[in-house]
Image 1 (spheres, protein in one colour):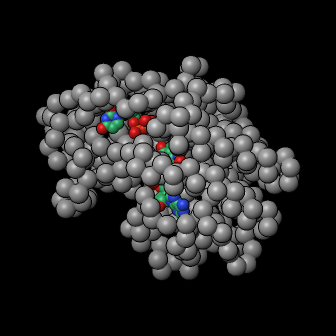
Image 2 (cartoon, rainbow, N blue to C red; image 1 turned 180 degrees about the vertical axis):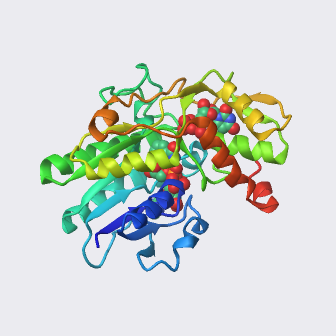
Length: 319
Ligand code: NAD
Ligand code: UDP
């Protein structure tokens, strides 16, 4: 049985990755310090003999007994309100945390995949974004703590690959959604769905003309799984290229949830990218991967999940 360490295991993507690797017959070690995650996301794996959990901050030295075949480094705050609240931890997990995990991979002779992001492209001047684009990031802006941590993460990963011959993979994840997102994490999908469920108006930031392209979690996990098992060490975009403006997206959510709320407008956060759409030609060619779940289906699945949350959780998630 192969051993895989997944950091950020109690988070949204990390917990789905744990499920997928267990399903594929791996022994999974999950690691998390719960800073933005939730033990609830792993509760169903508690009794599973192929799952172990270590509560640990990956910015501190990491000790693992026994062998490791793969490492997936997904620990990091991922939502703008999270990383604006904990900017230093965000910088540390992307830099010191990644350094620790690369060192661990080297010691264990494991292959490591790191979770990068479309945010490395910043407010992009090239559209859609291909992997060749270097990006347009404001290093000293409030979002810089996340974007630059991820850019450093990519650089140190390539350095370990080139200098130490480590087997590395880099996924550039574009906005991904689905069950187990934290209702109060501030990202647009939980925000709009929470508002719809509480009977509040939907808050669109700016004039809502900014665009995003949303990928359902199962498609994202499939892309990550294929990339890990590929032999390609440079960054690969994984996302759904179907782009929509945030204003139109709010209308779509109102229709889906069958509520009669209005859209209200609030100030656009500093450095909020105006447009974002992945070019996934590379993933198609290299991994024979493309997303299968369209937004209509994915949003229904996600809304059904949020509907199961208790009234107490819904109230806790109020802005
Ligand atoms: P999330 O906040 O749900 O999960 C992140 C997890 O990492 C949490 O459980 C948190 O407690 C844990 N964590 C943070 N710092 C840690 C530390 N120092 N030590 C141990 N654990 C720590 O976010 P997510 O959406 O699941 O994102 C997971 C990864 O994917 C992140 O690296 C993020 O940057 C990347 N990513 C996600 C998206 C997306 O759309 N969901 C897009 C681009 C990149
Ligand atoms: N957004 C919004 N209302 C909200 C939350 C977010 O209009 O209540 C906007 C946000 O300004 C951004 C887009 O939705 O333009 C996506 O935001 P999110 O935080 O989900 O992800 P990111 O900006 O990192 O892509």
